[in-house]
Image (cartoon, rainbow, N blue to C red; front, side):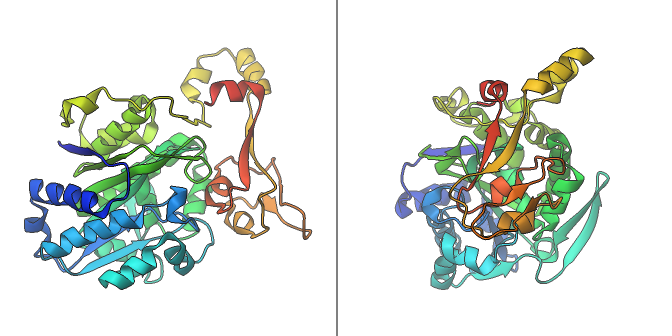
Length: 375
């Protein structure tokens, strides 16, 4: 299955238009989409982050795709997502540039969760998904190229987590605090939505390395990636970033769910062995398989010196997003002018506070051993 990769270093609308035009033609998407009532675009709109922060899908990517769809006779286009935490969706639309492009192109903006939630049971998980997503005849998934402090890598499959409305996402973090369990949940979500997804795109022109998905360092990777297969797209994108994709639970599970492997991936030869140099890959969850091989006394010794937890820096503006979004109510803010406090006995290290903070006020404090291992 083909993964389309193109070197594009800036958000040039003409280059992006040509890129999407080639994919739409190659995959004959016009034939598939033109008879449907509408197409739903699902970008990454994580929170109150402007386009230049490299946290959310850049509006130039979205608008270029809209132009291509319109020029191919696909006029009825909707756009939706559910940001993290308790931030107002309308404010996110404004800051991320989505509101302006929607006004310009006449795209209908959808606030996930406002029209109801449908519960679907998949692989033992009770998934609560926005009803508008399940009603959409076609979805185009527009992800962002980033590392992730819990799932290691966030691409096309992880981007679908935004179809779960509001704080329900935080509830799932509480129910499934282990990275492997959360990956199994998201893989089940992917299975529930897979038949509706016609194309997956990763905006990698500017992405994020380090402690992503919102507090890492912006990096000009200078690539666009797309495929009709979300799992193979993530496999290739993660490999290019420097990961061993087989060690990332969500990538492995989604490939298995699709009954695909690396041998099924087709792309230009120059990308097969390509790796970005010196990518800062932040892995705040060490594989339990490695630790489980240790004798009990060694595990106890290991965890005595290996630890990490969220903490606050001076950027905190006392906005309370972290307080309201913590799935286990481990964060409190009692005194004005004082940063919130974290009850580490309650903290499950889901890193929601780190992910949702729009001001990069939450960082991951690590022991010396964790600093050596979590690069």
